[in-house]
Image (cartoon, rainbow, N blue to C red; front, side, top):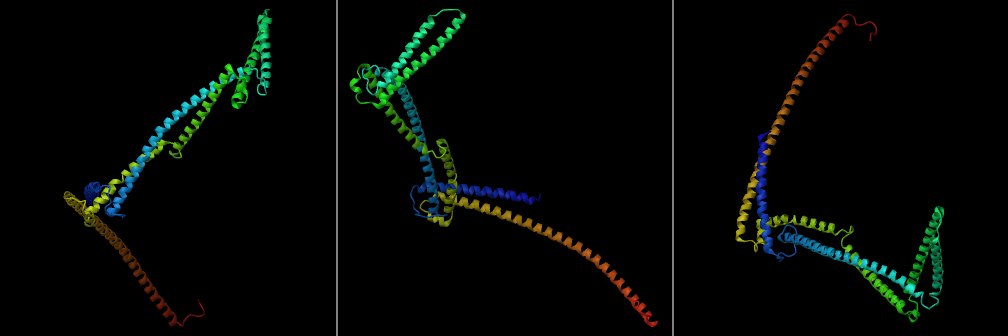
Length: 383
């Protein structure tokens, strides 16, 4: 490899080091100037590569970070609130389920007591009739079961009897279940409808069971309202988390955005430091430039000059390489021309030989034509 290419790489490294050093100085200076300027806006509304424009861009980035940070704080608070809501919803749901089970038991108890009251009006009349029918079945099954269990006999009779006992027990169990269901439905129907007139006939345990059932119903209704309100709060918070409903993803996205914005600050610092290093920009920033900053300007200029000098050396070496390349191309072309000339010379020799042959042939033709003419010409057309 041509040594000059190694020299170019060496100068490029030197120039890069000088520029990086200069940029670092001006970046630090720009950050210092922004700290000195603080929250004020001494340059008014402006844009572009002016002190006011750089500060406007800086304020914009600061606002993006502040807004994102505030949103993260808000989302984190929402996550805490959402956890509290989930706990409350769970607790209310558990309590509602417990009361629902308790109400089921109370309704059975109340229905049983209700059908024992002397009241036989429109509400309880049909239910009492059903109760009597089921009770009769239960009595029949119990009596039949007692008879079957008292029978004795051989093995075959014993097997058949046990089959009948099992079947009767099944029917008895179903009847008792039907009776419990009847009592439950009676209690539920009364509690749901609260028919007028029953307050006058309910007393004792029936009245107490009714009051207990109404109290449970009202508490469940209140819990249902609370549960709906809590779920609505949860929905509103969930809407803040975006389409995917994931607060962690939303926060992670905001954190990435903040990191991206922070990466733009060095460029802002460098822009302001570079403006301060120029005469025009320094004049605009004069009220914020201090005596100790002058050494930075001097050092930055020195580093810029070194980088420029190294770049000039690079251009000179590249130019010398281009010159050598052009010279090599010229030599190549000259060699090609020489080869072409040799070919031309060879071809011209061939041409000269052919021309002599032509002259000789033409002389022979003239002699032969003269011979014919001297001897009286040709007889007839011989063409």
